Image (cartoon, rainbow, N blue to C red; front, side, top):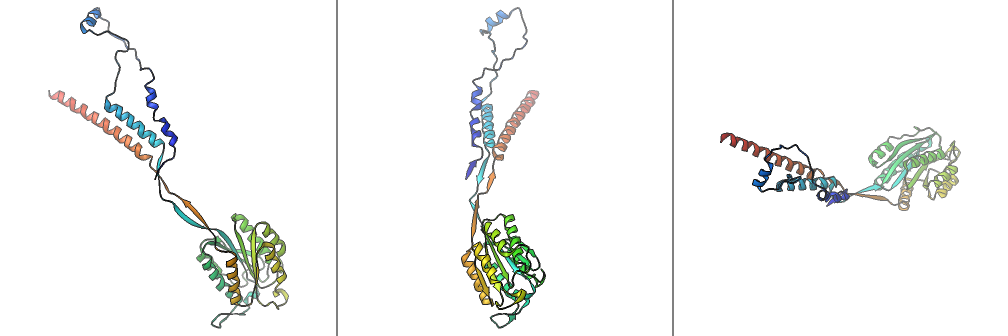
Length: 330
């Protein structure tokens, strides 16, 4: 449909009519004085008067001037063609995944359906690939942590790139320790920088916090203040001891403070079940953006006015040339 971007410009249309209210233009010129002027007036039967000569335009000129003014005003009002609405679906949730890459993730205690035994990190990768395919509407990010947390993938809609960078992670590449609290702190920083309204963090770890600058519970309180829900998944044997022992109290406390949920995955099926539950608690969220393309047509009336102006004066020039040529022939 058509629409005028500046419709108030149409108020200028009657402006030429107001010009007719102004007095006619007067110009004084020198005249030739003759002693028999009275006789000339008597013979011509015309009475001399001030401003007796008034230039008048013919109808073609009046039509051309009026039409060009109309075209200029329409062009100034900026007519535009508005196309049909186009809708785009935008990711409505930012989902950050934090993966523990400490040495204990090398333990081969996860069994595939075909009986193959794989290490904990490979099991996590398999299930995270499925998660990426199921969360088409979410923007995914990836943090890996060991001695320190590192951003592996910033928030992105390109899930293929996210899965590729996940596949490139290796056990021990971030160190052998487990800084659970610092990983939460890095996620908080990224969420704040991204200015998202719907924030979810999934943390996978198989050990307790061994050296974070900020304790996990304190980091969880900051996350809760920034409306970040944390889902923690504890991987491995709960009966393990030492640095590899699962601190389930801390894991449960972190999820509870932020309004999330904690899970314990002893095998791949339990891990897949945990992600399924998270998917049910955090359904896919879309934001629909609608816009209508606009194409300005102000050039059309302006071009038409210039075309008529050129045609009119071109015809006038041709007539003058033809008239002069006819006079010379005669």
